[in-house]
Length: 334
Image (cartoon, rainbow, N blue to C red):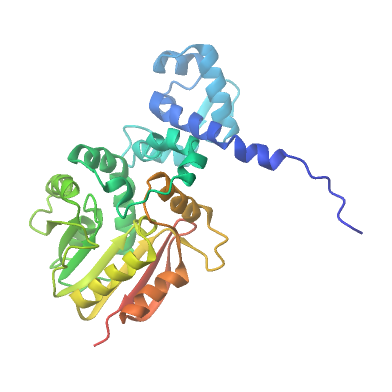
């Protein structure tokens, strides 16, 4: 029998209104709704009083948060979902509220996406052309906690035993270098990033007691010569910011800087080879239109090709954060 299911606009409406859900989540973080509930203010009147909004508005917001399964409801009382309790309670050890708010400054720009897509002006560094120290400080206040989580995962996933010198390209706060040098005694690291960013990286390095293990090198890693004699190169969470020609240039420079037997690890939001997803990687590629950069999302096979084209052997895709990040690595022969 032919498929007689009637088409309607339900799916399209849900996508069109998805920003309402984003707004509800961000408002809950800004108002510290989840923190209030974690501290026992778990009814509508108690939440309203704790965060300074009317009971009517508290009811509206908590009803949505429960429908989004960010909260559970038992009669008049609410409780945080497990991931919310772990990451969105402000005084928690793994608080990631600033990361949830990270993209909010782009809200207006995404509302103008059609106009942005018609804008033919592009530049190599996108949002980082006029980046200041204060920009870097705000950026890494938002990304540091999530970066440290990814850094811990990297140091659990990759055996760096016996490695002596790591080059961290676009290392930002230095999270990967801080964790790796703490996990593997004898390993030192160099964070190469834009000059305003290395000012902030030095602050995080010092705060983590890593000054003797990690140093910074101000520069643009697409142009700045790399230190030679390194045995690990890491480039994490910045793949979509660059076009293929720039990635090839960086990978070739990394190959020359590595000692024989050294490894390069590219960790980033990558598309499946059929380019049909995952959505996260596709959206980060689209984000580069907002930034007026030349970057775009790359497939896993394309990234493998950048490595093999530079001379790397044993190139392979490794799982990292499913649906979000892949780790693609190769070894310099010798």
